[in-house]
Length: 422
Picture 1 (cartoon, rainbow, N blue to C red):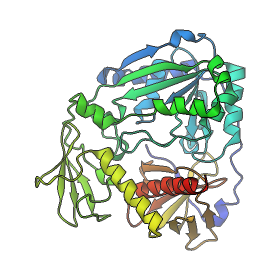
Picture 2 (cartoon, one colour; picture 1 turned 90 degrees about the horizontal axis):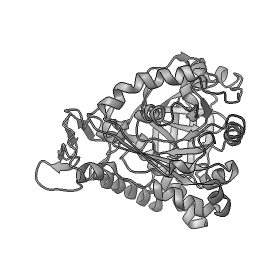
Picture 3 (tube, helix red, strand yellow; picture 1 turned 90 degrees about the vertical axis):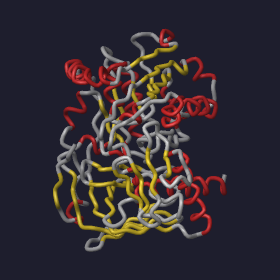
């Protein structure tokens, strides 16, 4: 999906008034019905199976917090299958509101900035629980999974649950990532989807448990490996594009260790430095065509890259630099493209310096445990987003595959600081 882009100088854009926060509104029943009807072909093609566990423990009219794993764009359609005809509200990313604020608000969405401290979000959720008594849908991972495994969850999740004082429901989809992995440019595969909806915590249990105990209960639910599930259940994915853009997440050759030379195309992943070629088999394995296996499991390869990043940080070698296109959101009319800048990321955090503007932003390495990153963001390009009051959406102009490495870098730098300082 494309987005409206306006070219403007940074010094003009930074002086535009910020977005005014609006209270959430009740979801339109007519619009939610329409979305559900539009989504029926997806439910049929995926043979969507829904399993409900302990949901009879809930009052049919009480509010609850629905925590869902974030696998693909299919997630939103599934919610309209699970919760309809009840009205509900959804925590959504701020950039989703550009050009469609009215539509999203009437679908029950309310905006937040990913991976930033946002007290307004908590106030909005409390308002919905008390005023509307609606279910509140939240993707606590915030970012889509890259490799089909769970992503880092915020430590503040348990505190939020204690503050809301409403039951917690866990929604887990299996097969949604296999159907539409983020790296694969929205090319849909033929895969069945199973969804489990379970009442995880009652109000009484939340009151008795500590924040750490709540976190432990929730964290255990966010443990999965979609590729392992595919292999164990012998699910065949025969689409000829299944490895397209796999280099976005497997950017480092597991054979020669080179970065920036990988290409995912068709059904193969090739290193153009050493010539190593892997086939992504119909059952989700990486098969070395020369018979000399290195890493055969995508999440294991991703973990190998994480370990390499961590070693670079510990040795002081970690440094990513690139000229980037800079996009800002100051209102919901459009995304503003300003002058290019130079991005540097090290163990000391981010530095974004305008090439022909006054832009000069530093971000502390402890600012967040993760980063907002996306592939083919509104058909503009692969993007990382930094900032607090002002969000800078940055599209690398040189090495396009650094987006994944930056995300790993942010996570590992944060972990190392936490391990060192407690």
